[in-house]
Amino acid sequence: MGVVVTLIIAASFIMGFSNMVVAGENQPIIHVGGKVLCQDCTQGWNEWVHGSRPIKGCKVSLTCLDERSRVMYYASDITDEVGQYKLIVNKYNIYGKELNTKLCALRLVSSPDPTCNILTNFGGGKSGVKLGLATSEYKNLIKYVLDPFYYTTPLCDKPDINESNYGNGSNY
Image (tube, rainbow, N blue to C red; front, side, top):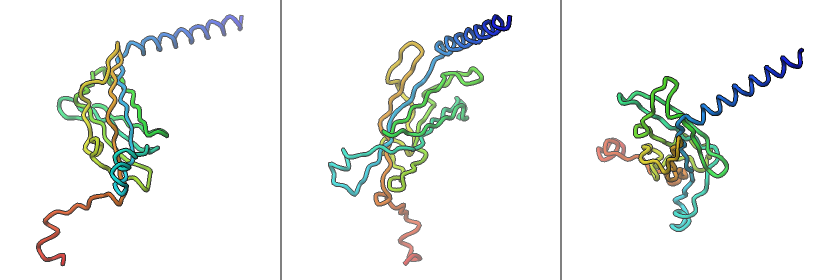
């Protein structure tokens, strides 16, 4: 008798799990992916342009707003060994409201690399990149593959010079 009850419970669990998987497959999913690289401006032009290296452990974030500019969704991911991030987002939030991907932006957050941790806007990572047209759409999968984001070295950081700090004689 105990074996029969155990088998019935196990079968119920498996059936319930398979129903959850099937229901999950029908949900529209958004995949957002790309790379984060380090660009060193102290190198020669060819090395600077073509010699970017991936950064492991960088954090990128996706923020989606609603029509009234309120945050509707936020997610983040950490890059892997080859500098890639992958965010998987359900097109509907927990309240059943659909995300408008045109109101979503992806941006750089942080780099753990002490030799390459200065945000750049090369690729739009500093100011954020809006999700525009999807790279591909198939059934319930919407995919965005973004151009690489870049950090640079502290030696390449441009100083913030504005007129209020210079030219009035008080700093000389």
